[in-house]
Structures are given as structure tokens and as C-alpha cells.
Image (cartoon, rainbow over all chains, first blue to last red; front, side, top):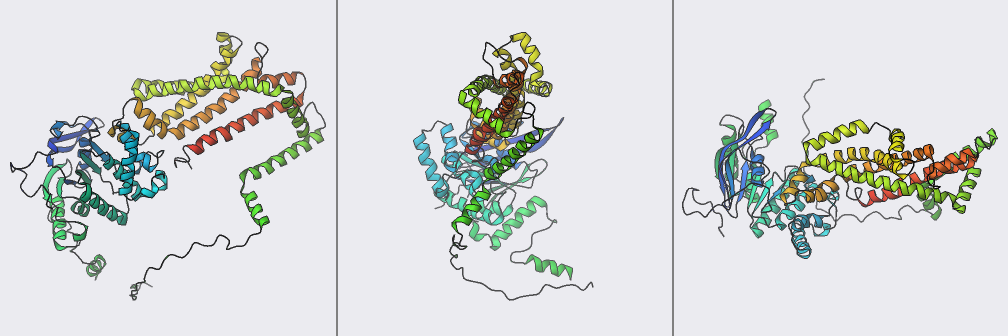
Length: 286
Length: 296
């Protein structure tokens, strides 16, 4: 059952060819008259079946990296390769799941939303319909196939967006903080469901988040980015963690390690596992 | 009074989750058929408005009675009679037909022009400048003010009318459609590009539907402007080749001192405006933007 490609060091020559490759990627933004560097010489490899997480505080350029992978942003230097071919423009082999709910055209029902990119790409209507039904079922929205997006909750909209992306069967799924706009309970549920979908379908995804917990739970490999400009800080394995282990001591240790890497030694280390923050606060006060 | 309040520590408890109670009975509050009828009637907006209209008509009839001069102010009943007469004799429908025919031509030409202008504005910067400049110049200019010029260029006839109608539709619609296009969420555009849509397909499949609320409101404003402009223009230069419109009917009736017919003509103008607003545009909105949750 071990399908994780990252048991060895990435430099090992025995590794397969990466699916997505970032090579010394620098991206600049025009901000008024000046140019602001968003990422500085970032390199990483994403392999087939990876749940590769880009993690960092705001300003580390993680979303910019994802937009570059999607082809919406052009790098100033370096490049991104998908299966060895340079990414120059948006393409149907890389489907983005955005954070914003308005990624779903409100004039299309759930089913039509899932069918939309398929039809746009010339898939026959019949086949598109079948695939759409299959994936809406899979994300648990079968009963809502003919509902319009404005009648759905935030979590359901996120599910539609994921179903729409998976129905396309892209080479890589690009997820730009897809659960950040959801409430904490729904977010946890969505992480669980995403995990289950991945167990079944084994797609490759690049997942952007600013939550350490989410990164550990969702990903099997985490790229840590430091802000202003975004530079690689570390690359960490997290395949051993899932939602079930999120309270464990190893999980807490990994979270603290990431925290240390991102924010330095001295700044506030999160409270140890199990400690009641209210009690801790009281102890400080008295 | 500054004693520190410590929160009380209370015992915890857990409860088994019981199945949800059945939904409240619809007939919990017994209502007689009469009560239900009253409630339905009170909730019907059209009925409240109809009562209001009836009151206004009564007021009008009373005022006419007090004034006692049919030439200056005919009553509601007299006007209604003239209206029915006009409809039955086929006189009014003929005038209305002429007006609507011209209106439709001018309106459609204006809509086509607006979409052309908006497309140009969306595709290039100079197009955007052009649209902004032109709408800033011409939107405040009443279309009817161009009628003398139109008469000079196109002569007495349909050409002049269509020209001023286009003018009355083009600018407000362009302005609205353009604002609607620009307000389309960036995410939606990116999603469209992600799926390989570009050029005309992204316009028809993403931009137009996403901007539909703004486009519809532009179409509505354009319709009202065009209708007003048309009646005014017909009042000014009347008939061509023996076929006049509704404005001409009003003007002619005044000349012949059929004041009740003047009122009937005005009522027709109002009725047609209301019909389009509440039946045509309302239906379109119900089928599109309201169904999609893009408008309350």
C-alpha cells in the first residue's frame, strides 16, 4: 500500500520523472511604478500521486506560485514544467479550485457546473452528463444535481468545485486555499472527504494553505515558504499524518517544527497538546 | 464594586440525540375558508395596487365633476369610454401598432450598437476610452434634442425617429453593460480561461451571463427612454405618409378638442409602458437572474 514517492531523498537518481517541476522560479509583480518580488528562486518537484502542499504565511507567494502553475502568471525567470513541457498559458490539464465561491457560474445548476468545462473542451454531451453525475454523486451532492449554487452552503459549493475539477481528470489539481472560506467544522469535514476522494481516485494535487494543521493533514509533502519575497525554507514529509493522528504527540511535534521553521525559535511556540488555553491564560494572570 | 467575578463551575451533561420532532401541522391553527381567502387577498400585491388605482380614479372623477368642464378635464368614466371606443373601432390599436413598430426598430438597432460598442470597449484600451468619452458626452443629452438635426438629415419620416431612438437606447445600455462586464468576478474569468475558453466564447459563456443583471437593467432603462422619446418625437412632427403613431393621436385629438381622447392616448402610453415593464422584463428576470440568485 505504500505509494508515497518520497521515502528517499529527492536527489536520488532512482526517482521517477517529476510531474510538475519548478526550477528557480522568480515571479515579480508590478506594483505601481515599482516591481515587487513575490517569489525568489523557488524550486520543487511534484510527483505523480502527490498531495503537495505549499505552506507559508501571507506574502510568501504561495498563491502566486499556484497561479503560475495554472498559467495565469508568467515568471520573470526560471520556469515551470508539466511533464517536461513548459507552462505558458492556462490549460485544461491543470484545473484550479479557487477559494472564492464565485468560481461557480450562478446561472448553471450543480450538474451544469460540473459539465461546463467538459463541454467547453469538446466532450460529447452524453459523456459529460455521465461524468458529471458520477462526480456529483461522489462528492455527496447527487440530490442537489439540479440546484443552483446560491441555494447551496459554502461546503457544498466547495464540493461542487472539487467535483468539477475531478471530472476533468486533469494531470494535476491546483487548489488555492479551497477551504479557507469555510467554517472550522466544515473545513475539517472537507479535509476528510478530500482525503477519501484521494484514497479512491489517486489524483495529483498542489494544495496551497496557510494552516499548519491543514498542511499536515492534507499533504504528504510540504514545501515551507518564507515571506517577502517567498523563498524555500524546507521540504517536509507529512504522509504519516491524517485527521486521525491530528492530536498525537508526533503531529504536535511536527506542527511545532514547522512553526519554528517559519517564525524562528523565540517567537510564540504553540501550547503543548492537551493544554487548555483558558487554564494556561489563567495561570499567567494569577 | 470591583470584586472579580469568577465564572461558576457547573456540572456537565450529555443527552442522547432524539429523532427530530415531526414538522408542525399545517392545520394547527384552524382557519375558515373565508379567513384564508382574506389572507391570500391581502398578500396579493396586485390587489392592493388595484384598490389604490380605483381610489385614484374615484378622486379623478370627483375632481372632473367639480371642475365641470369636459374640454379641460374629462372624468375617468368619459376617458375610459373614449379608450374603449378607440380600441373597439380599431383606431387606437392602429396608432399603437405604428408606434411599436418604429420603437422596436430603433430599440433593436440601439441594442445592437450598444453591444458593438461594449465589445470594442472590452477588447482594447482605446475602445474603453472611446466608450467612456462618448457616453459621458451623449448620455446627458436628451435624445429629443437631436430631433431637429435628425429631421434635417433624414427628413420627415421613420429614419429620423429611428435615429433619435437609437440615441436614446445606445448610451444608457452601453454604460450599464460595460459596468456589468467590468464587475464580473476575476475568479470566474480565470475559471473560464482555465477551461480553455477564449475570445468570443468567454464573452458569450462567461461575461454576458455574469453581467446579465446589469445588462437587463440597461435594457429596461433604454426601453423607458426610447418609449418616452418616441411619443415626444411623434408629438413634434406628427405623421408621415398618413400613418401616425400614438403621439400623433394625442396631438391630433387635442387639435380637435377631443380632450377625452387625449387622456385615452396618455393612458395607453402608460399602459404599454407598464405592460412591458411588468410582463416582458419581469418574466425575463424571473427566468434568469432571479432564478440564479443574482438579484433579490
